[in-house]
Length: 128
Image (cartoon, rainbow, N blue to C red; front, side, top):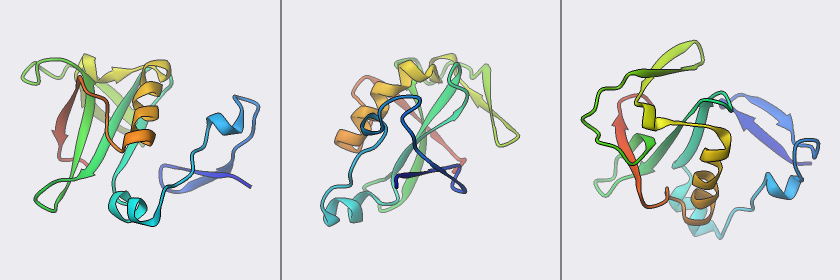
């Protein structure tokens, strides 16, 4: 049985009505990889038509930081959009909004490399 966790609480069985199960899952690597990256993650929130991609990773100073992922843009530009996640309206820059199709390559790269692809901006967020 294959399970997925959504918002840290809801557990559902994956099935192949949307796409083949092999396309929805990946296998964890060696234990040392799991140990190094276990508290790092990439997640998405809101809808398939308009979502935010967020990245949590361990920094060189030993602290975890939470980032909002965006297509290349000037991080000093105003944040004028919002997404709705768990009844909260989270501010986002237009370049930080993705469709599911546009976010998918970011997730594939993360699964393969435990980081986001080159060319994306990471805006530090206080929310975690």
